[in-house]
Every structure is written in structure tokens, then in C-alpha cells.
Length: 153
Image 1 (cartoon, helix red, strand yellow):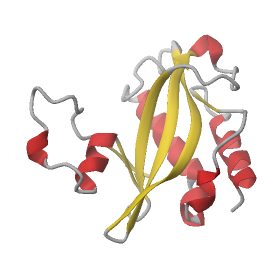
Image 2 (image 1 turned 120 degrees about the vertical axis):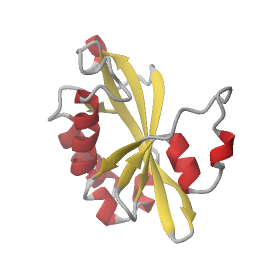
Image 3 (image 1 turned 90 degrees about the vertical axis):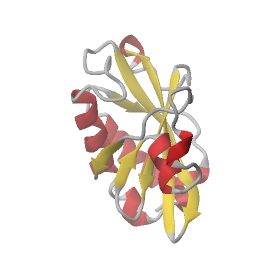
């Protein structure tokens, strides 16, 4: 799939929601390296993200129309033990700026997608799955969030 085709698909899916939009300027070409079966499933990924927003997860103020998410990148992160992991990079922005899709200002948020199992997770869960950290690294004084799976798309 071409990068431009993916952006059209992503934009049409995020614009259907009241919580999300897609960055409107130049994107990196990372989406071109993601398997088509993942790219063509972006609508289900967006639906899963919206469902989690409505459940108050990872962007609790989005559900109250105080904030929104701006998707600005999706690219492969690592190929580990035969599994491709992709990252979805987003910004949490004030809701009043939801239609300003040309400015990348906001609080960063990244989700990890396991292209094999179709699981969407936070960074900590992704690092554990990729064996880049051990469960013992998750101590009370750690800067890492608790591992969270947001479900399968």
C-alpha cells in the first residue's frame, strides 16, 4: 500500500470519531514498510482506540471532550522472534484544537501493535513482549507504567 493510500484510509477512519484526527502535513514514509494486512485493518485499530477512550483508558479527558488525539505517525519498530511490532505515535491535544491538524504540539502518546496477534498495548507491555525488559524491572520506583493490553483489533 502506498503511504498516501494509507493516509486517506487513516484520515477517513479518524474523522469518523469525535476524539481523533490525523496530522495533515508531511508524514514519514514508515507506513510503507508495514504489512498490508495491518494497514488495511487500521479502521479496526482506530475503533479499538475509541472504545478504550470511552472506557476512560490512556486519554481519560478525551471522553469528556476536553482533549483529543492527533495521530501523526505509524511505523515498524522492531522485528523480534518472527513478529513485527509497529508503533502508533499520537499527541494528546486540547479539544478546542481538534481540527487544527497541521501543528504537532501536545503530550506524546505511543501505542504498540503486535502485527501477528493483533494486540494493541502500551509501551511497557510492548517492551516486556519484545523481551527488552524483564518483569523484575517493574519496581515501585520505576518510571515505567504498568503493562496494559488494550485488546485485539
